[in-house]
Amino acid sequence: MSEQAVVERVPPHAWFVGSAVFHYLGPGFAVLLFARLEPLGVAWLRIASAAAVLLLWRRPSRAAFRLDRAGRLLVLAWGGVLAAMNACFYLAIERLPLGTVAAIEFVPVVVLAAAGARSARNLAAVGVVAAGVWLLTDVRLAGAPAGLALAAANALLFAAYVVLGHRIARADGLQGMDGLALAMGVAAVAALPLGLVDAAPAFTDPAVLAAGIGVGISSSVIPYVCDQLAMARLPRATYALLVALLPATATVVGLVVLGQVPTLPEALGVGLVVAGVALHRART
Image (cartoon, rainbow, N blue to C red; front, side, top):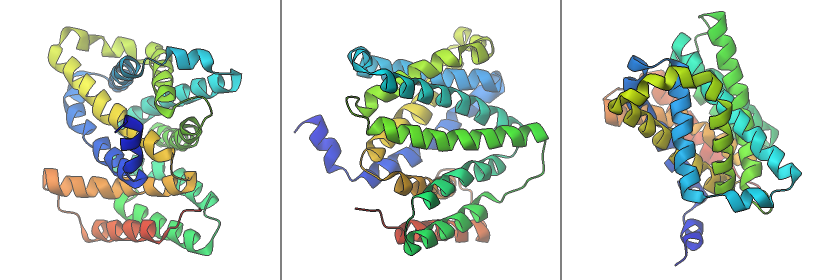
């Protein structure tokens, strides 16, 4: 059985679940990095290690030469978004609680889902998911103005990641994985002036460097690959709604792995998010 046949036999929602799970394994590696490196150094190590793995795996040079002007601009735009999104995320969580950053991050994504709802049932699903995300993340808008601005920028960039990633996944003449590899290469170059100096100590500390590679693989390579496989077969609005499962996934991972028992509002939030996703129906 070919690789493509195996990929197609796996339901697209399963690829999304893989992305959601691995998305939260990265912070386990990042604990070491935050103690040794500045946030922008962590961000660049994550991007650069992911780019190296994807470029070595896909070797997308032929795909790059086949791209037309629109395709090249799409890859460049997505690479720029990936670089800026990672930088803003790490700078934001340095200044604000992670729950606050997460709450702000998912607002435009839920708006994307609403924009593609197109039915009373799906609009109701978006409303239920939005209520669940609100309860899960326990929004607290108290904090440094710079942190709130960075969190808002990260949220807008995350929505742009969904939109551009969906286009890459379905672009003619460009396989989603090749587009992802090219975009991560662009992101590594774009973020170089921001994070190289802060990442420099990792190159003399094998443990920190290994942790950086682990963050890149678990937080970028596996989730982004799974995202592309899901985006290629799911409508953008459906994918945007599924993204709202990420706070719920974080709660479950925290319970199973870290023994963090959710509060009653958090448990209710998980139930609302799951109910909203179950209520949603994709257009055929």
